[in-house]
Length: 75
Image: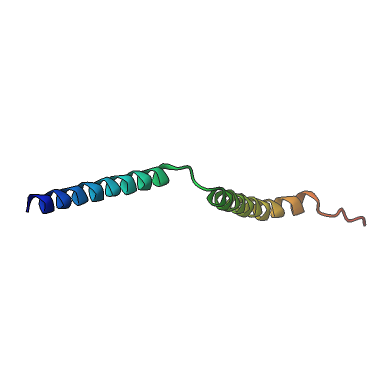
């Protein structure tokens, strides 16, 4: 019986050690820097935002530009 108990305890210790390794690896993966693909998505997202803001600015500036560049009529 004691031999059986020893083997059981040994299996439990081994399983705990495996679980600790898995947890440690999961922590390492979670703390790793984001992949380049995610960085690319972030850059494209930012670029899109800036383009929308720039387009809005151009639309607001358009009436002012038309007033400044209005043709001069000669009589």
